[in-house]
Image (tube, rainbow, N blue to C red):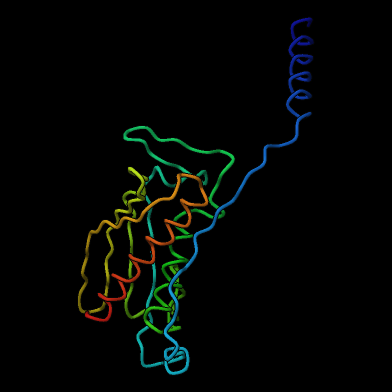
Length: 195
């Protein structure tokens, strides 16, 4: 009985010690769509029902990127920053940004995000797998494969995109990631037009 009382007292003391401090401050970072729609597209293509519906997704990210904590790799070492987090799951953020970028780059508002409803079933889809997103020697590197699917065929590509990284602070990392997603979006948009 004495032992149970000791354990209860210890648990109470530990609980009160951990509850006394203020919770650590957490910063949340979001990705941003950087593509701007051409001025002519706003007036002539918005609501254009002749353009095929484009579905964006699914987007999958490598397992080490699935945490809400902002992660960086140093060679084989993975580091997470508990007080600095993505404001949304990274795959959802990438999907949102790609959809907005592609809508602007193609001049179409006929873009839907996976999972789509049956009545919104797109005529063409773009799925993406993010294999790496790593800072390397002052640059941020994105390695991704993407596939354009249409009823008649599909085409896949694997690419690497790099951009200068001002620092490895989370704000700079989010900004550089957004810039890389714009470059990926431009390549996808060009392939959609050529397809």
